[in-house]
Figure (cartoon, rainbow, N blue to C red):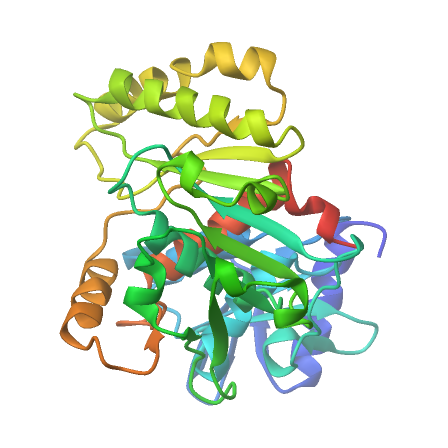
Length: 374
């Protein structure tokens, strides 16, 4: 198809051949391109004429429209592209299952290939061996264990086999999760994915022979982490909080963390992540916090080109009741053989799942996991 107009007409014809009534809104709003109706269903069709894969934020914008007051006239939506869907977008689509309000598809010659209906093959990383991701900050209480478990879950939703390794002698990861954790899947998608938790003293690459991703929950005292594992990190997530009264103090902690990691590992990409993010109440305050936060690390960024301070505008882990009650559930049920991550949909929404998939998306786009994609 040589242009958008031809693509739009092609999709309209396919819907008409399937018995839908198709109209083109005039004037055309930015949120959708066609309106289709059949048997009591009225759907908005959003078209993307692209030469690259659709990314997760593009789908979420369309979903946000359908769930807004402006989209209340539609009881379903169709997101159709000419190319395909990136790994984080595919993970998002899979997590919705068969009850999704949006169907995502690729326009072929005579039909729409609906991504929702097919089990997508897991991506195969070209790098031989395993990919090691550390979660580490020279400070306790910033959410390393929560981030480790849920980032592993996000990778599992993307199709990777994942192992969790507890590097902390205090064994907080094992105390919370026991021998493993379930990544819940939506109804009708199949059984949940199980991620095993290993003690670092018992870890060997053959312990999880089929896993490609290894996520390590580190001790806040660098010297208490096994040097041989820290030196293997391909990527390291450094959680922090956006506390307006502690930005300078936290900044020094992060600089000490970077310095400590670099003494053992020169090749890893380092990502500073805002965890437990709370909206400050106005765009002006948010801009002030962001600018102060990002400026704190200018010196580090100038000399370390594998250091990435993640702007919370693009990726952060929001404070949410779902994560809070996930922690409460673990405390109330310490004897359970295994626990589930805070990835279940509640009223069609799950902020932790969205945030951690978005984090994996950010890492892929900015520096790290892009090398995993063929």
